[in-house]
Length: 353
Image 1 (cartoon, rainbow, N blue to C red):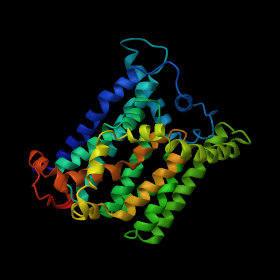
Image 2 (image 1 turned 180 degrees about the horizontal axis):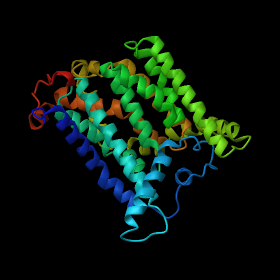
Image 3 (image 1 turned 135 degrees about the vertical axis):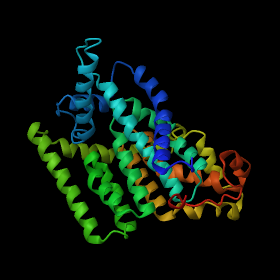
């Protein structure tokens, strides 16, 4: 991997991420029940240009409109072979979600490499995300989470490598993809000091302008219910209390722990072996951004109607932790020669390899 030209190696990582997503998500798509969930019905309506949907969903128009346009294009092609009355909206969402989430997988890999993990452990860290239940779920169903996951991963990667253009792009576009992305903006404000305050403020103002403009455009097309926003805020407030109870129940803990599956054992193993073993990897994780990211993910979980799906937003932290533990913790020393990694775990960061 490391002997290949950089662009070619990144393409291979992207294709691997897509391959890890594709089969499981396709099974979900192909075996999808006829009755769509409430979220999916909203996004399907929006993909067809109808915005009379719950206020929670009505402004997340970017991915549904792209899926609708792609479905029309596919319909023209498939109609030449097998005429069909309906454009293939489910397949269009599947393709877009898979391509976007695989791109998030590439940035997750690069984030782990930038933290000092070798290529082999970084690939396994990426696999922990691409094969998790939540990734399969949001790829195979008619959902829009893939776009915001990509925005979160790019934001985290930008903070890791101190990239101003990527940070500003994530700040500007993230809220338009999904309003709740604004909860991640404190990361850019607290840890984005490598970008001047003026530029970050302009990005925030630009994001606010885009978001307000998008709301105005959608509302002009389909006027919202007068009490929709108030009722939506009250519903989310009630979610916090009920979700807290659910999260700390046996069922909630079991379902949430199943998102990353047996990779949770790698994370637990990272804290085994005493202080000296933990110090081999944990300081490289950059505690500030990692902890704040996990707190924001927790906030998303408490506000959401589907808590386990929100754990996918923790992808950059989880993947990087898994990669660093495999790369440096003494417990996994016997595995490292199989990954082409020195047993000592001393690896250069991405920009030096």
